[in-house]
Image (cartoon, rainbow, N blue to C red; front, side, top):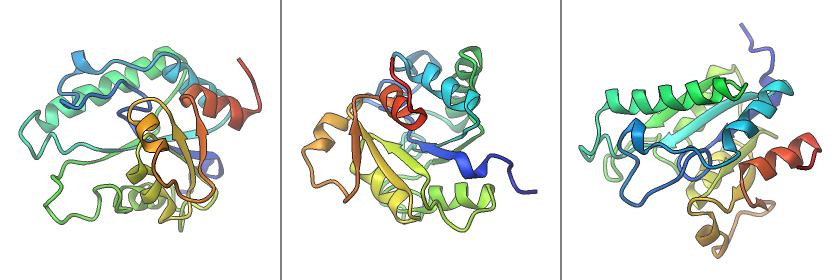
Length: 186
């Protein structure tokens, strides 16, 4: 069955876009702290008919820093808080592998984005906003023709100093991207 809102799909990175990032990894639900305004931004997208997917590298699983069960608890908290704000995260895909495991899902490779496209019965992500705070988020989304948006939260200010993919739009945070997409202002 084709998802009814697939034409208004958006793909978000997790750490540094929805929640605060840490060089020491986010290892528990208690350490998972939303960036101010991010959950409300997700709610505004949902209320405007968008379908929200999250694609996240979580090599902390392979590194033994947290378990898959702990990761599921973090994602449950994220979904719960999004619902409390009036939103819905329709799909979460993650790469649990380390950088040297040779998988196809660790960003900048496009495996996670391919999983999202397949889930919503799409050939690719042409025209789909792909929001990230790192170059690898943008590169992975571009591999399936997504439209790149860089946020300056998380690692975004550092990433902005790099050579960004052509057409990348830069915004202060997820709420500012959502304002742009919905044609609203705060």
